[in-house]
Length: 217
Image (tube, rainbow, N blue to C red; front, side, top):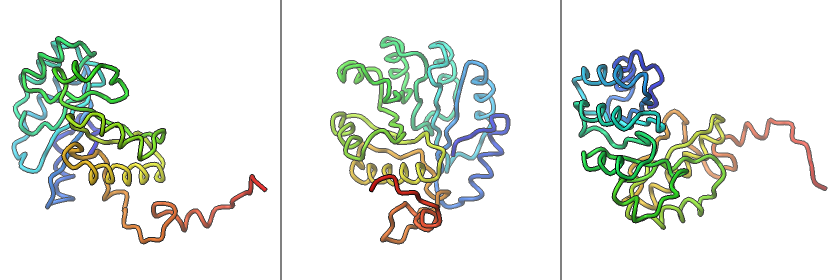
């Protein structure tokens, strides 16, 4: 669940847990230099965390000192699955965060650093599906970094793109169960109960109703 209302985090989490009473839920929260102390204060007040995991993403917007302050003062470290791009990449600073047990993850789009360097300063990658890589491309990426863990998510807003991403994410998770820890895609909300044969990830009827125009022949 991507938490958008950062002023009422506890309320958002409670509502999500009530809607899905029998499963563990991952909550993704965006941090920046303006809101990180407020979010820290709110989250430290939450008591019942038995069905909650956290994914934090700072988009490199925190300073090293801010990232370290947040982590050192966060009371639920065992519930944190990943902390994506906590601050601008700096080998020594990221290494210190890893040594402090922060599960630092790097956005794969920025993964130009060698495997040898990454091994000391990051725990894994966030792999964002945006439609520009095939399923085989994605499998090749994970295959070349088998010692790392991956979280798979997407940045698409159209239902067809979202369902395609969900399909790819589930396939990657099935193919690499030891590497793909989970994916940041809400499959339940996408209603992915697809009866085959299907050509459009559950959207065949919608496609058939459209007024298609021939562009070849």
